[in-house]
Length: 294
Image (cartoon, rainbow, N blue to C red; front, side, top):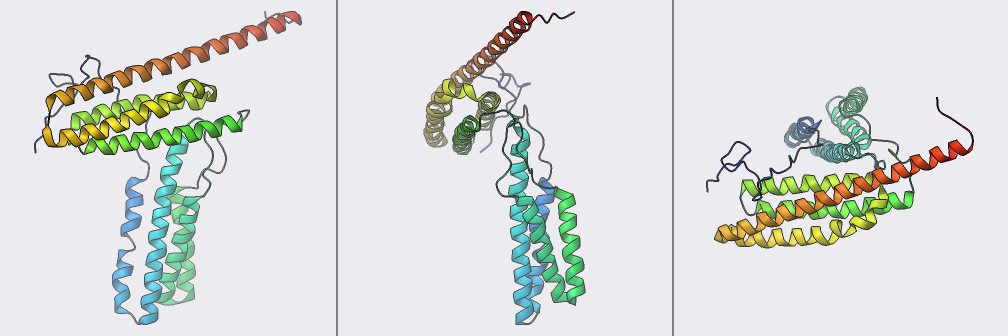
């Protein structure tokens, strides 16, 4: 079914029903750094799987084992790259528990070593294994090995924020999966815009975990309601294409985006107020101690 194109240069501006343009869903995001290279890792071992069936039983087993190691290394590398990008996107983040990219390098070396042994013995195995692990490490780099922005931060509070944001991200992902069923690209862009607004709130809370208490209902109740409403709308709209239901859903997204933006702005204002108070207290203390700035 053909779909109407909508954008900022379209007659309706591709914006909301209230005339405000949706937020760019790519704000604050960087392009994936290793998407093509990671996909290549899944394709490169395929010749091993094919050539294995032209060998004897032991050669078949070792070639297939090498193929399995390389596919496992590709999967770990992809997960490690995604975890590294999520780490870079946050100002406060813990290092990944499992160093997936480093394990991917080791498994790549092991898989190539095993394939080299089948084709030429121990010398080939050593050369292929070392080169494979080193080149993989240079191509994708190591995993983050230390926490970021955690100095002087209450670990209990940051753990609470990490759990809350993690659950909120799952709700956003479910909301995105649901709207795809509606097969309406403009609505998908509107959901992307709301998700960008919600993630701006997430980053604000991560910067100051004290904001979590006042914003918890936004991360739970409101996002759960948005997910459920999106799933119900997608089921109805995919069959009926009801223009009234579509308009009501867009109005809901407008209200959600407006309220999330307002709450985020309020948190930023409160944080600025706290900073001003701390500055004034410090100035008063310096004045009492007789320190005068020239």
